[in-house]
Every structure is written in structure tokens, then in C-alpha cells.
Length: 413
Image 1 (cartoon, helix red, strand yellow):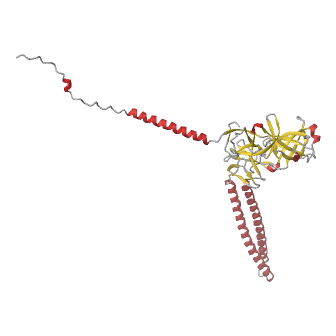
Image 2 (cartoon, one colour):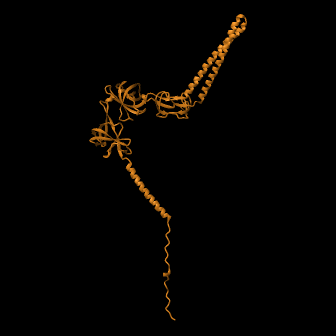
Image 3 (cartoon, one colour):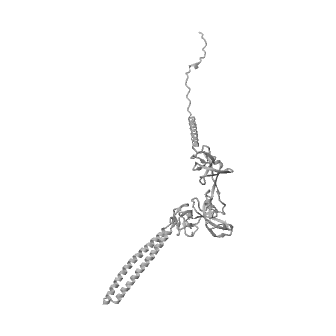
């Protein structure tokens, strides 16, 4: 039997289809995605915050001080420069020697006369005081005993004196009673003197104890501090490691300006002459003064004479050692006749409600002040108005700037 040849069959059709295995999950890719999302969100939040902060920050402005120049009725007779000096000042020291254990003031402290500002160790002085008081108690007890003996001697002498005429006691016994009375009287006087000496010792100990307290001699302000707690202070600073004074205080009511005047110009200055004082640390303020003293000696090396000018009115902003300029005036020209001229940059002027105003910066707040422009000189304008001294005006104020708005001075202004 013959048959057709068997052909190779395609068996691939007999295979069953199978699903592809799921892809493996990569944790690193997921972590990177989350980090990227957090960074993007953080950048967005930061941009929103910075934009809000920039919107909330007040705008920056340029500022400049008002320039003040002197407008005098007539020129001064003479001008000189000098320094502010306290005529009444003292280096406060201790009368005793010891280690400083208490200090209640620092530089700038105001003190009253008699205030205890420091104290040195008192242990040894207190021991001396206790000894002196104990000796005083012993002397008082001895006096009480002597007085008792005196009273007994007086009674014995009185009895002997009464019995002697009747021959009840002998002359010798009477003499013994009299001598005993005299000894008792001497003992009382000796005990009284011992009490006086003991009281003097107690007083000395009290003075020594009080010397450990350092008090201020007058009202004033502490200018310098020389010693610290733990250092040894001595009246004469007997060693290199000890301090001679604790603090330096000055009476601020005794401030004067000491200026050196040439000998050739001294004829134009007299005692009681009016003067105008300008302290460089207080610009725009002219102080009224009076010539208080012309020191009766000259400096041969400089050819000058020292003149002291007293402030007629004290200013809390004036301190010792500040530099000052003095204008000596004639008797007919008083400091009240001298006015001041104010100049500001022309760019600081603006118009508001039909008037000329300037904006000044006070505690990061713009304040509008009406002024009157008197004239211009170069880039400056002379103004007249109620501007406080040493105030800063805002240059080129924005049109939108209003009084009371928050602004900031640009760095370097």
C-alpha cells in the first residue's frame, strides 16, 4: 500500500500563549521622582515667599542731613576753638588699703553726693572695731567697781570721823580710812580716763571702718572707671599692682569751654563778655555763653592765654572733652540776635496740595513738613520751616510717597 509522504507539521500552532512577566519595580526611580517633586514645590514656595517679603519691605530712599549755616547780624570780634571741660571733677579713691569687693557704678552712671559706690574688704577693720568695743566694756565695768569701792571708802571714813572724837577708833585707823577714800577716788578717775581712751579707740575703729566705704563727694556722672572688683586699691597706689583711684566723676553743671586765645587778641576779650558756642558733636545748635575767666598766665611756647567760657544753658548732649568753636561777641550783639540758615538739596523739595514740602525720615517713617523756599544757590535751596535739628531729608521723593509711609534709608546714607 502506497501512501503520500508525511510532511513535517507546524507544531508552533499547538503552543499555548502565555502572558509576559510583569516589569520589576525600581525603588530608586521612585525616590528620585519624589525628591524632584519636593524640590519643585520648595522652589515654588520660596519664590512665593520672597515675592511677598519684597512686597512687604518698605522702599529704600536716599537721605541727606539738613545743612545749617550761621547768619550773623555782624561778624564776631574773635573766634577760637577749644574743648569742653568739667571744672569740678575728682578721682574718687579709698582712704584705706584693701581689696575691692563691691562696685555699684559704671561709666555713665549718675551719682549723688554721699552715695556709697564701692567698698573694700572690712574683715580686719571689723575685728579691730570689736576689740575696741570690748575694751570699752571692760573700762565701764572697772569704773562701776571703782565707784562701789569709793562708796564703801566714803562710809568707812565717815564712821571713823564720827568715832575718833570719842576715842572709839585710833588715829591710825582714821588715817587708814582717809587714805582708802583717796585711793578709791583715784581709782574712779583712772577708770573714767580708761573709758575715755576706750571710746577714742572705738571712734578710731569706726572711722577706719567707714574708710572702707568709698563715697562720692558731689553730684555728677562717672566718666572713667579705674578699678575692678578683686583689685587692690590704695590711697597712694603704693605698688604697681594697686590702684590709686576707683572712678573719675565730673559735675556736669560745671562745664565750660577752654579756648586758647592769642596774646595779641586778648585785648578784645573781657570778663562777662557774651559768646556763642558751637559744639561740633551737636550740629545746628548754637549755645549761649559768657566769658567766665581769663587765666592770668600765658603759654610762652604758643603765645596764647587760656580763656574759659561758661554755658548759660546746659545741654544733655554736651560732654567733657568734646571739641567746640567759640565766637566772642560785643556787648551789643547777643547770641539771640544770631539766626541760622537752612539749606537742603533742591531735589528734596516737592509740591503737595499747592505748597512746597520736604519729606524727612524719622524712625523709618516719612513725615511731610511744609517749608518756604527762599532761594537757590547751585544745587541747594535755602528754606525756612519747622525742621528739627540734625534731621535727614529724603532726596527725590517718589510721587506716591505720603506722610506716615514706611521707608528705609539706603545703605550708606
